[in-house]
Image 1: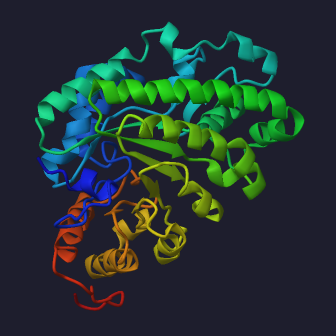
Image 2: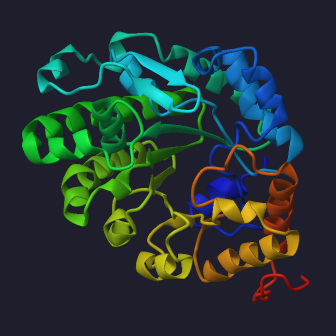
Image 3: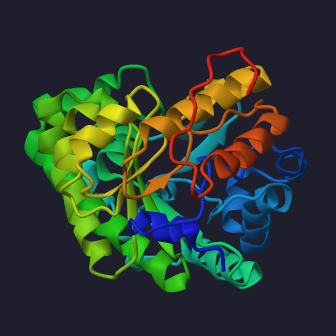
Length: 356
């Protein structure tokens, strides 16, 4: 078994830095697009055989050190009773967002439905198919991020409705976040039971909160989930995008690793972290459009800045974009393994555009 990914999360020595990328199973692959042309997005998520196939597609092309189950963070609010659709060009949409907090009484718990069973079945299928080749990652959305989508109705530049609720209805927001925390925790534990060997918690819209708001409306809930997962012995990666202001507090949540976004300097993250947990990241996804030698230089920069860290998982600082050249992803995977091979103590920094 290639367990470098799990070892890195546990801050154990590894022969080379492990790598996977967010949105690894998805639209940048032609085989994914071929399947997507035959099915709706939600059909793919809720058909275990299709979700398993999509999960495995990138590993048939490249030497990733982990697989991540094909699903979506918004399956939890959908399972709680909200109607979810995916619109081309707009993304996920809740046609009836939570604008009246009296609606909260209508939200159920995921234990009251079997809607998420297909996701768990897909995890079991992938685990069996992998047969120990690499570990499998499960995931869920963080409470604040889920609440933001549920109130706003879709993605947004400023989350006017969701953020207004923090000021106008703080008690109701905490009640919603409590309920989401219980459901996110249960879903992650169910994924672990189904076969996930690590899980990631995505707080994708953490950057919409001020530091004070983050400390009140996100951090306590992230910590509660991290502590519940930690009790199982399964490593949890916490990715709070745009929350570099709270890296010190995030390192104390109990997460095995923190995902570092591309806007954050990895060297600074290493300094703040003080080896309390592993770090994951943080190449700018746009670097994958750069000329090959420039891309190699950027990969080296990330690896250099992570030197001295006990436990580094290479990843992008956000999800891979749909039109990313597959050849660049191959270069990324190969170079991370090559450049970080055991015994290479100091990685030379190559200026962009110069030969490697």
